[in-house]
Image 1: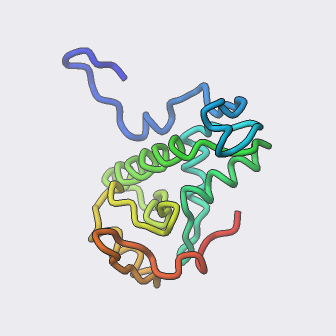
Image 2: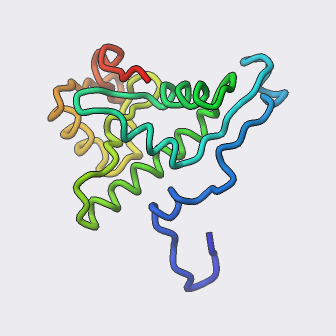
Length: 161
């Protein structure tokens, strides 16, 4: 990103198209081997994450963890980087909303991608109300547990990649 004063900010679509060095496959770092063992880890590209999110049909759901499992299989690695995948899912969501504001109707259905345990990602565009509206319009039930919101029985509606 260009941080010079007066430089135009990158659009979310530009950020989604960036990261030309990805995907990247490396050995699992030492600090992660206690939890994951030895093997390889893939850091996916933002476009791969966006494409996986686009394949979730109406009425179905995905989780960030499910997406990274799919991408790890695609690249033949032991695991995938969940942190980077979650960041790229957020970028894909913001880019989709940018596209919607520009008049596009076929956008990435980001509201169908949940956090690992079925929790709504409140960092996605529109916040809680918009996410709930979109999910409930597709037949899902959103429940509150403490301060967080989840799709009820989300496991039954997960896409099998």
